[in-house]
Length: 298
Picture 1 (spheres, helix red, strand yellow):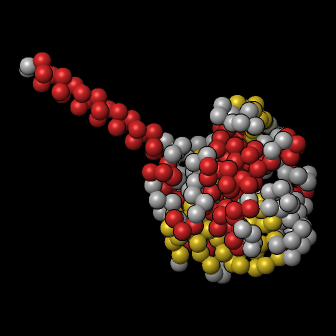
Picture 2: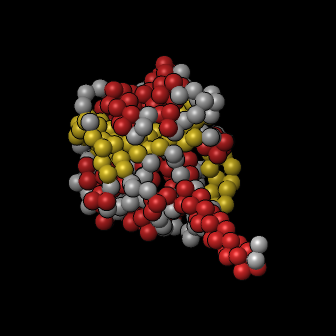
Picture 3: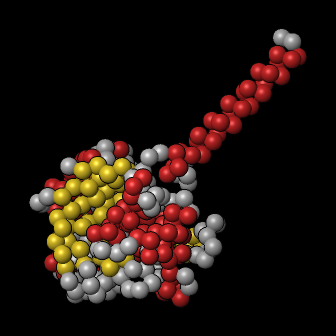
């Protein structure tokens, strides 16, 4: 082979390798939203368990997210000692459906956990989630074991103590309830629900709440997010009691920024006024413009 031909082929090989490396990087998660069309599934109807199955089905089914033998951690909002009708916690039937789907997909273990605001031994029971999870074949675990981690690219939340169950999981599924929050966060949906994997939530409030919410979301990165909007809390969030509106809706997807944007609209809150949605979009974590999101509906 002539030297000129050898150099030509070598340059093409290097270029191809560089392109392949970039494709792998785009698919790794950090810039996935830029490489793929953002899409979410929205289902409205009767039966919380039924519409949860439908929403995940529209996203390709649980087998797309959970493989045989994997350990799954499901993170609902179980923060408050409130009953189902008060809409301060995730609906137990939505959680039950997810546990069932994970088991059907072949998960070796399905753990449900939350670092609650009120005592966990009360909220787990009053919310109805503990009974629902046990019925579906999952495990409820108390939030007692944390491990310190470093968030290398964070601006404010440089380190945090995170639930060891979450760190040890093969798959994390985030399943928040949709509700309003105070003036700082405006809403508490999927990203803010991830504050429940952290031991010291006070740091978030003492520092930059919205940026910390976005930064913990960039670290945990659940493979699937399911919004419980079967009934939403419109006033006196996050714990209520307040005005509750029944929407009979569940939304699912991999883009939690798009889902939080959609959830904010259900509450009558302009997503542009929600700091952590804007920051997360700027970080490249997802799509904040619903006009650019493909919405699958039943």
